[in-house]
Length: 349
Image (cartoon, rainbow, N blue to C red; front, side, top):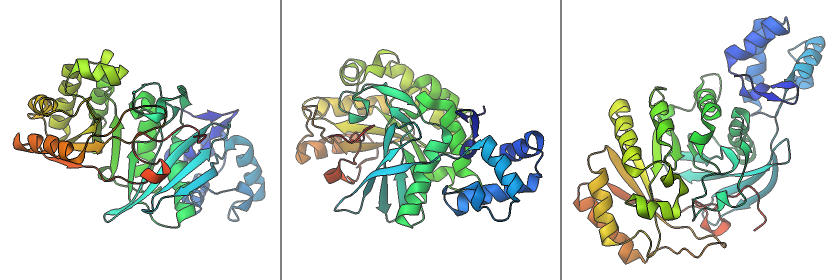
C-alpha cells in the first residue's frame, strides 16, 4: 500500500526497499541515494529537509521535494509529571491532535503511542472515545510520535507500547506496516519483543495478527469476567462474545508461544467482587497468560471509581490461588492525565 498525503508520497511510511524502488523506477535517481535519504531520516529523528541533505545534488533535492511529503508533528503542549512521565499533545499535518506518553523504567525508556485520532470502540471508562473517531493514523504518524519524543528528551527509547488513543487492530494494515518500520535495522531497530500492542478484543484481527510472525506482546483488555458485565462497559462485547475472544487468545498463545497479557481495570462495584475474580480465573486459567490489574484511572466525564486497596488485593489473591500470575500495573503520570484511559484527541480538559 502506498500512503499519500495530498498528491505526494508519504516518505516516512516507506520501507528502505520501497524508497529505493520509488527513487530508481519513478524518479530515475540512483538507488544508493535512497539509502542516504533513509539514513538522514533516522539521523535527524525525522527533522529533515531535502535542501539540507548536503550529500545529495541540488537538482535531485528539488525532484525529491516535489515527489515526497515530509510529515511533521508539532508539540502543542508538553506536561511533566512528578514521577518524570512526560505527556505530549501533538498537532498533525491536517490540524488533528493526538497524545502520547514517555515513561522511564529500570528496564529502559518506553513511549506509549496513539494509533488513531479518537476511537470508535466507546469503552465507558475511557477518555479516548469521548468525541468519537476522526481517522486512522498513518505509519509515519505513529513513527513520528517516537522520533519527536527522542528529539525532545534526548534519550534512547527501547520499548514501545501501542496503548494510547485508538484501537490498534481497527487500523490493522497501517499498524502492521508501522511495526515493520519500527523493527527495521535501518530504522529505530526496536525488537519485536520490546513492543506491546493492546486491543479491546477484535477476535478476527487477533487471529490475523497471529499469522504475521511478529513476536510482540499482545495485551487484551477484558475488564469483566463475562459477556453481560462486559457489554455494560465495552460495546465491542456486543460483536465478539467472550468465548470467541478467549478462543482467539488461546490460539494466539499456542501458536506464538507468547504469553497473553490480559488487562483488567478494577472498577469499584462494577467488576471487582470475589465472584468476579473466581469467574475470571475459571475462564482464563488454561490460557498461557498474565493478568495486568489496573486501578481505574478516573476521568471527569464519568463517575467510575477504583476499589479500595484491600478489595483489589483480595481480587489479586484469588487469581493467584487459581495459579494465575497477576500483578498491578505501575501508575505513571496520573497527575497529568497520562495514565491508562486518560489520553484524548485534544487537551481541552
